[in-house]
Length: 102
Image 1 (cartoon, rainbow, N blue to C red):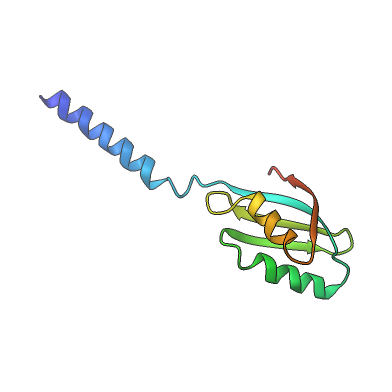
Image 2 (image 1 turned 45 degrees about the vertical axis):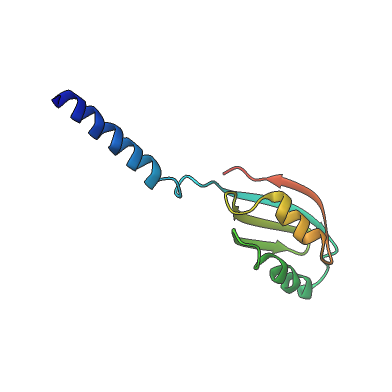
C-alpha cells in the first residue's frame, strides 16, 4: 500500500511539473522577412503599426537599407503564415522568409 502511494505521489508530481512548465516550453521563434515596398522612415512606422497588433509578436527590428524585418514571436499564439498574411494584406509584400536559429 505504501508503494502505491509513493508511485501515485511521483506521478502526480511529474504531471504537475509538466503542466507548470507548459507555458515556458512555448517556442519563441525569430524570422527574417525580406519585405518589398519599404523605402523610407515612414515605412518603419507603418510596419510597426502592422506588427504591433498581432497577438504573439514579442518584438521586431526593421532594416530599411536591406528591406528586412526581423520578427520575434510566440509560435503557440501566432504563426509565420499569419504574420506574413498580415503584412501582405497591407501595403507591403513578403518576398522571402527564413527562420533564425539561435
